[in-house]
Image (cartoon, rainbow, N blue to C red):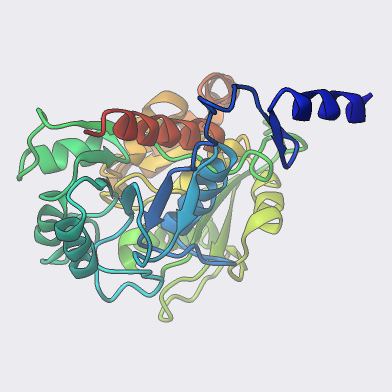
Length: 353
């Protein structure tokens, strides 16, 4: 049957290309559309890594699924450049800001999309805000990873009248999901977990250590603490159960063995650690100075400060099931996140002059 169709098409002047029909006449053929090329200035990392790489893997997978070509250099003509991080000393940098500016001079029509996921307040540095400002000056569209991050830069230099949006982080739902997870019962210890790939104290280690001491000294009862990843070398845990850095399925399996997620990270642009915990069904116990984390915690968590952490723990214990139900109603998702990035890229390219 197929051979007859092909023969008839050839007689009528039509052609078949790799199984795709060119359905018009010889005079006005339809041309196969070339997939838009997006240059990304950071390589994804394998294994246990920070939130940027977790985001990037999902972004690349979804973009390719939607027909885009992803490249990691500017040697060919591209339709858009996606800035993940403007730092020249970035370990996984594919190309830097000098190369981006040079490419824009040679190809003024290229669109530049800038994802902002850092700030000086986060790690007590003094260069990041200015570096992000310089990079953002050539951006056609800006994506902030939390409302808190947007408001932070609006107060400093970002003009909210320029094209932008907020897209909150999400993790891969094939891996980070609540199925098979533990559900807290009131007759058992409440098991808290946290995980970080950086030993920076700003991740909340003073709070985790204080909680560890209180558990060891029986100042708090009915609470367990699991710590996954890295921590400052000077910390000596007394009661916490610790695990080396893990990622992917192994990390998700550990998270699902716990009841709730504790994050004492300060001024986090958004973070991915608490998102992975939430997607495994864990309500949040979060620091009230947690930056973008607070936006998730206000929906399905309990906030704390160092002086009232015991009261917050008790509230979490009492409200565990309602918090868990609210979490399921508004659970973060990597699919949602990646789809929103695709929508932004499509919009920016559709509006291209």
